[in-house]
Amino acid sequence: MLAIRRVLAQQAARLASPIGGTRAGSSLLVSAGTAAQRALMSARQMSSSSSSSSSIKNSSSSSSSRRNTKDDGQFKTWKPLAPTLRHRRMVSRKDLHKGGPIRELTVAKRRTGGRNSSGHITCRHRGGGAKRRIRLVDFKRSEPGPQQVVRLEYDPGRSAHIALIKHMETAKLSYILAPAGLKPGAVVQSYMGVDLKELVKARRLGEGEDGFELETEGESEAAATATGEAAVETASEETAAGETVVKEAAVEETVVLEAEPSPDASPTRQPTKRAAEPDFASDLVGKISMEVGNCMPLKLVPMGATIHNIGLHPFGRGQLVRSAGASAQLLYTASSGLAQIRLTSGEVRRIPVDACATLGQVSNGDHKHEKLGSAGAKRRRGWRPTVRGTAMNTHDHPHGGGRGKSKGNKHPRSPWGKLAKGGKTRSRTSSMVIKGRPRR
Image (cartoon, rainbow, N blue to C red; front, top):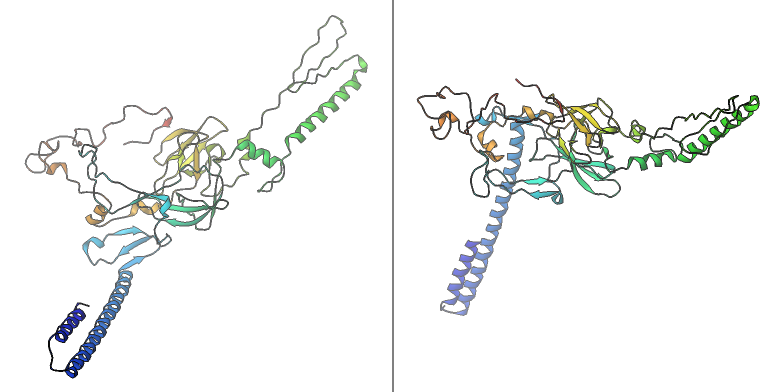
């Protein structure tokens, strides 16, 4: 385009200069127009050739990148074209969504570089890295109803994958932790926001979704009343031998009076057993869906089940067992009180039975076998280099100074003098822990 402008400026200057006659001016104008057209055509040809070459280059680069990588569905490896690619191994993402997240379900991540409000470094080895957006994952699962899995996504803020689910009644979108084996199109449910008493009453009115039928509360009371009246009539027929039966119209107990031969004898009171209140939790166990990805209180989970995303407080959000490949096992539960779970570390602890738990194991279990292969991959994830203590000076680290690689006959310590290997750092233990994790 610059060349075209220059040619037009030169032709305009020539036209502005005095010329010998109108014929010469007209011929000069025609020649200027043809030159401009030729320059424009040449510029178009150059742009089209450059665009075609760039498209060819992009296609060739994508095809070459496919030739230089191998994805077997479990891991993705690279051809060793550079030393950093020789041992690089990442988990396959063939089944994950290729695009970005839902914008409304994310917030911007503001970083501090490991520094506090005064500008002092309080967390070492942090800084830099690519921009990120925090995915707002629903750990509480308080909205009941069926929800369909739309797709599985990669989350740069955690080791596990996340699943985008859509409520089948309200069409609301949300993110949850993706359990292992969850596929797009599956339907998951949450029983955290469901009133168990109302659910039992609704299912006692007739046949529920799972094909079971329970008698209503009125029918049970009528049956109990009919049984009591029949028993009274039978007892009254047997009083011909001198026995008298008196029935009191009470709801909680029935009093039976027996007449003895002596007129001074006082009647004896024989209370019957009171009917136990219905256990709503045990009534629902076995009648709700136990599919992978369903969230429910611990009192509804069958004992021995594999669970994740476990809460620490009643009706609170999940806080335990959320990393890739993690799982816990439910050892004991009841309709009230505390349940017992065994964590991946081997620790056994108590959890309130009203705390939430999700069935299944967390996805991306092969995350522990990944190898970044280069220092640059670590920097792009927001990690700065780590300097060994023996390479520092004496006033910078307890291992610093001296000649050679000596640590000064000291046990491994942190920069602040705390024992780094085997030293106890916990001053008190939680009363909810029954058995601690095994330690060396």
